[in-house]
Image 1 (cartoon, helix red, strand yellow):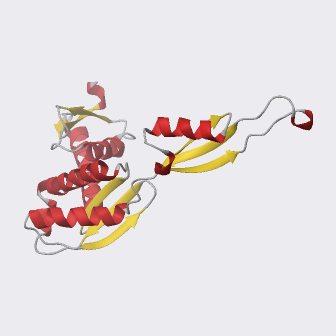
Image 2 (cartoon, helix red, strand yellow; image 1 turned 120 degrees about the vertical axis):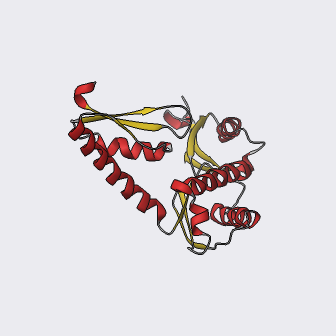
Length: 215
């Protein structure tokens, strides 16, 4: 829940600013805490008065995001004719990690290079955001695929770098999503013998690994 601070001559004025900022109809849609209560300054209460300061956050429809995400995800899988159950849900302030149970449909759920899993994750995030207004990032996983993919990409990056250094020729990797490309860039950024560059258009772009002396 993201809080913002507001200030006004009275508590009502501060609350009205919060309502306007969050674009809600009334203060019942907000969680409000008074940080500093306004009071008169000077001797015997006369003189300049201090402002009221509050902090406010948007109440996301009073919905349990984890429960809602589970309901939507299982509905999506049913509509696709795929079978799986939720194995584990781990929620933090910024992220919601959902791990599906492995089974006969695991390969279909992951898809080639994880593209089906990525598509499901994208749709789930889109639907949760649309339905609840939550900006919490949902990570979808199955059989520890994401950790395995991350390790495989790091190994691939090092292998390709060695090949580029040995041959003196650049090498273009398979199309990857933004997260995977960033992982490859980070894996090779300390190796001064090579440099990396993303090429192409769209979400799935390619990375070119080239010898440093070819810049």
